[in-house]
Length: 422
Image 1 (cartoon, rainbow, N blue to C red):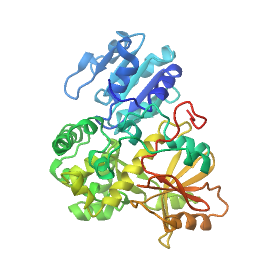
Image 2: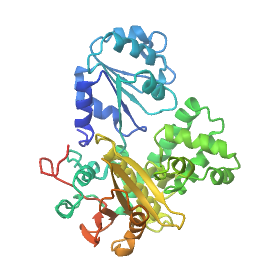
Image 3: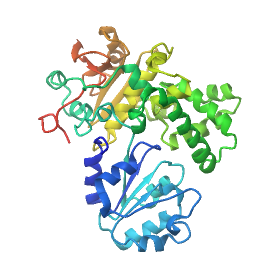
Image 4: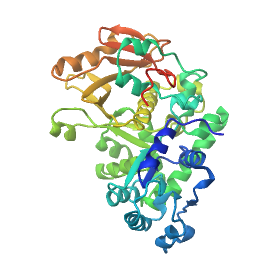
């Protein structure tokens, strides 16, 4: 039996009320395992393939769906674009909830087409790798983000403890979030990620994204891993490889479309500035990033010059995964002033902004909250909640009047407690 996933309850509720539910996420994050364990043998499953026409999904998609009139799981739906129109026709004839559950690990064309063609009929659930809580078997708990958004005060924070048995910061960064990587011996992780990267580049990117130079694209992936947690500069990325900024932007879109890269847009109340200012980019999995930088052990991570960026990447990815199962889903931003003041993460939810700084320091101190103080001073008319400094600290504690430190591996509320916001 796999470890419990925080998205399980959310997925079941969506299936109860919508005819099509799409579970999207990178390769090996556990999409098929989650669906199999929740739905069991009562749902037939068709797993598609990039080269074989399984079940005639491409040649005769209507016949495939007619063969399963009650319910059907279609795994890796991106390999049969022809299914999109057929699913739409089937759902238009019968809008019962729980007709189809689809999974996809690429959103370059098919998942985008699903979103457009099945508007009002389909809902999407993004599944990332394990959160910190899921990796230690605590995925049944609601996580700390939702509880903090609902009630950002001292009583909530002080009631939380750290997760049990989570290991050191460097081991967590080295393992990353993919379920298989959390179980393997440390010395086998470089081999695991080498195979993962090779399969991704040769099977997914080369076949589906029309990247003609897989070796150059592989180098591009390594550069992105080295520059995680920085503002995105396509011109700089292009110069590093000798390609145009347009090619660098296209390749970033390929990485993002396969869920291995994500970006936080710059926050501003001015819509023009939001578009013109640079987003902040993150590799989605720190284990993948460590392997791309040829880091061979947690000890190598400990002395890595960009260790702080890896830590920020892990924390932001964890918060993003928690946000994905909340309804409504919070919007995530970053903020940087022309003066250089910045806030790593702004969570916008229910009309309020929740600032978060990430610091790889066991005693962050009051200065860790300076960016949040600058943000408050420059936006006096905004509703801004007390902020958090997420760091490798032992317990929650006040740093300033409106900023708290929080352990990076906080357990959050226990299921059934008053702070459980599910």
